Image (spheres, rainbow, N blue to C red):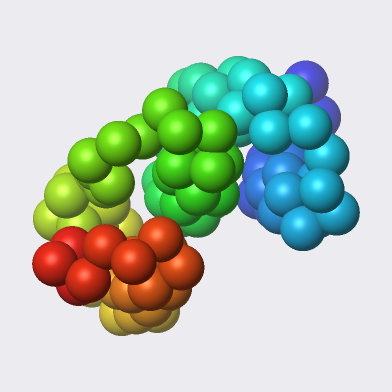
Length: 108
């Protein structure tokens, strides 16, 4: 294959993000996120994997399938990313946003 993997992963993530915000069927988004996360993991694109996981968590919660608001541990997100402060900041902010939206204040 040829092309820039980073740009491809960014496009995949952007597609999921826009579908989520546009109100596409939640089951479709959940399936697409799961499939895309496998692709991201195969290509070791942890940054986009973390961001896509956040969308999937919101979708599953909206579908009523994620009762306990489980997030991958933040340490596991950062593993492989080195000391990337921006991804940890995004992760914490998104966790706070989802907890606020679903009134799970103990999770923050």
